[in-house]
Length: 223
Image (cartoon, rainbow, N blue to C red; front, side):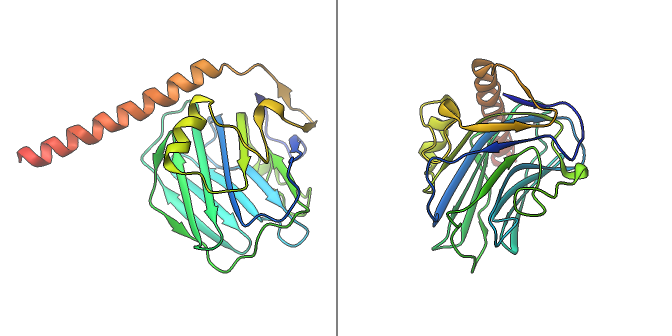
């Protein structure tokens, strides 16, 4: 996993995709942990035309934002535990639908219309949000925390695919964590990922949420 130990406008990781052609559809999954209370970038893909060609950010404790070109979609979740979270975002250009999964749980769909496909020439960065193509970082939007298991696909993941990603049985065809091509810049640490622990925590969180919803439904039924 990549560890970003402190707020900075220099520390970042550059990811090199294995597919370099325009993308009509895209899905990105990753695991992350941070105790930040401010907004920070989880995944930043820029092109020479759009600095936010595909940007995922999080504002603790409940808000995720997906920005594509000049438009964005905001997702609000129930408060998440301050531990590892598994995030997946999928976007279909033809329908404009944007979907977010947190720890295997799907949110309401968002819509981003009218944006073009993601150009073949792209800059993919972890730890920072790109203000310009490949740079222009702002420390106030940087990640202080950890990130691992980053995957990217050139198609929209189906709901049944998400569980396979969480369990480690499905890897990305554009970016694959198990054969990652990357370059670390600045104060970034590389540490082994405790995959078993993070998977258990993700599954445990999903089970708790399902039980909570079941109890709520039972109370409504009995009343």
